[in-house]
Every structure is written in C-alpha cells, then in structure tokens.
Length: 229
Ligand SMILES: O=C([O-])CC(=O)C(=O)O
Ligand SMILES: [Mg+2]
Image (cartoon, rainbow, N blue to C red; front, side):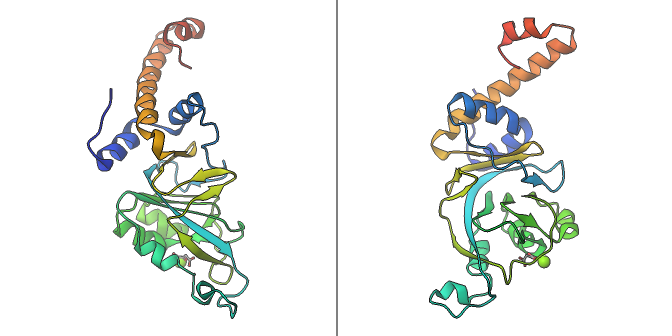
C-alpha cells in the first residue's frame, strides 16, 4: 500500500502517478459522485497538473470600482484579493468562485506572487488573462480560457479560507484539489487517504490491463481477470 510522510511527498507522487480519471472513478465508487468541477475549467497548457490543498477564495460581482455603500470591503481595490494572495501557503491552490463569468479572475502578477509563495496552482470559476506571462511562468493555471476584461471595476474578493462551490461542488479549505488535462476534481479531506491509496492501486491495475490488451488479450477476458476498464 502506498504511503507518504508529508504533503510534499504526497503531491509529488500524485503528480507523477495519478490522473483525474482514476481518482474520479474511486470517488464514484465511494459514492462521492459530484466532485468534478465544471468541464469548461481547463488547464492553460495540456501538460499542466495541479495537486495541492484548497485555499478557497470567494468573489462577488461589484458594479463600481470603489463603492460608497455600507460595506468597508467594497471601498478597497480588489476587496480582500491582495490579502488572500499574501496568505497563500506552500502547496495551496488559489481556488476562486462566486462571481459571474464575465471577467478575468487571475492574471500574471497574481500568479507571480503565488509562485514565489510556492503555491501549487490557481483554479478559477471564470477566465484568466495575461496568457503569455502566465505561460512563461509555467504556473499551473486552470480556467474557462483567455479573456482580458478586468475584475477591477467588476468584482471583489469578499472572503477567503471559507467554503465555496462551483456548480454545486463543495470546496472546503484544506480539501485536496487535483487537476490535469481531463479535468479538475475535489478530494474531500475526510476521505483523502483512502481515495489516494485506492486510486494508486487502480492506476497500477490499469497499467497491467493496458499491457494485457497490447499483448492481444480480449477486453472481456481482461475485465474478467482484472475487473478494470
Ligand atoms: O488585475 C487582475 O485581476 C489580474 C492581473 O491582471 C494580474 O494578476 O496581472
Ligand atoms: Mg495583469
């Protein structure tokens, strides 16, 4: 059985050995059937993989850059975004939801700060901008795609390290976020060890099945033998 001594070892192993399909299959088997984030959230580059712990960021639409209303957060540029960025810890994922998808929730300067803090990546329920710059950083960033329209006058971070959702998928602080070119999913903290150990076992089994099929075995026979497809 696969074990790990800390998060650094765990996330390095996950990035090398696991993929979203195999983790999703195990979550389904354990009756966690709503763990994939919306399909339109894609890596900026096919090779990008993210594995880390959720640092959820709650964003809300605003209709003025600085408002004169009752809430002091609305009088600050970007609300609490700068504070949220500076609070990121090693292996954490800046994961942001709550606003309408009509502007960029992440850009090059934000990713530069995240990278310096050794964050694992960014996953946003909306767009990214500064594509060239982020690609140059080679920082794992997952979004709906490229769109430069600014969040400055349109949205604000109103809280962080609080639960968020994307299309009904719950993301709690500290949950494991894993994403690759087939999608991004959430592994709830309370079941992470079991999910990861079973996913590793299944990934090992899938390698054996692939080998058997390459060797000419029928799919019926290989399923009967390994119980994996
Ligand atoms: O202003 C923003 O929302 C993001 C941005 O351009 C950057 O991080 O460079
Ligand atoms: Mg920018």
